[in-house]
Length: 498
Image (cartoon, rainbow, N blue to C red; front, side, top):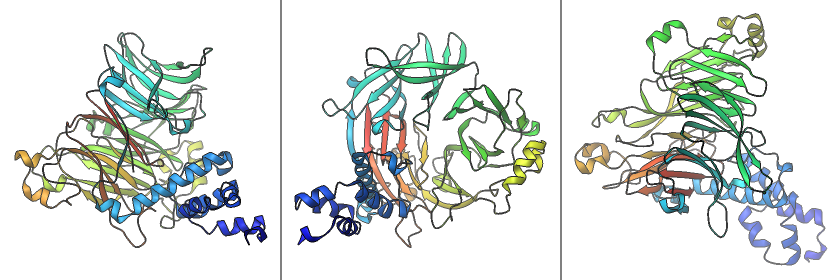
């Protein structure tokens, strides 16, 4: 009977099957095996089962993927969404799978100062900064079938120390890595390219040097944003050397010194500068050979914080296609008995419906920045929060993704040493604060995450991994791939998957 069904009708029938059913049906006969591998089948699956629900998926047009890549990405996206949405997986307390573990004998160089996932590259590359006699930047392939990890190349100028590494979000850009380098007392930002040399091996090659004491925060295509620890941010086109200066008013400069920059986000017709004490929204600047200075359209202070992360929300039915911004804040608390401060707060910046793009652009041209409306409504409003615990951490970073998922490191159980009241720990779910818990990676979904089950507005939490040594020093999070990687003071690495 199957032979009587024409190909178009068979493809139509397959479009109604869930991805697990597609994988089962391909094992029944040769024709269904062949049909289940067609590009149109996996295009339909990606559109109906992933993109239609705004689930995490690579920001690559489907037509630009190979057939094999399209199937792999769709299968992983379905599995990831299922794992996040599964009440059993979350409530069990540990829903992370360890994919790769490397001890200090593999990395060899010393403590991991930073670790980053490299965008693209088949999701196989990572970048580490390790400390030896001087700092070493190393590119690794973590997808090797035989060895698990292979060193591709490294970059380590003599007597150089590195600070603040960022990777280009555009994987096709020539400038792949930007980092601050201090060498022989001279500070600069070096932009590196990943190139193939004559021998066929890879090499990290400097393609641009910018003499500045500022730290690189964001690299997107030819645009780089770098900031100081007070009040200035520069947006620079490193291919043309045109730039603009974003700076607070002189009054704020006197009040808020040593305000370390944590993140620079290119938002809707604006630039959000996230600092350790405040956030500032600037208009999207016009870059020029003779740069002008821009003052913020709006600002807000969260007070002193331990960690902060901002992300532009993926449009879904709730935000109606508007690029709202979510901000996850872990407040600083030196008082381990302060229960109210031991939590993570999720704030939201909503797009202002009264904002007029054409008016804003005209004001920029006329130099009337003060009259320009803010694209977002200030101050941000508190949308949700997640209980946490106070304690000492080597890595205080929090990571919030565009799809509303977040990961962060929870400190070890100080209550077992009598540093935190038992009342605080008893208020937390067992999966977050088990008895005598070590350092651990927590994960959560915050509204309006499209991964939250329908009708559920709460936060689902779980633990990805435990660390008895409490020596994690660096972490990175790939939301679309559902991957987290952590590095330790002893030089080890752990790769985890949701």
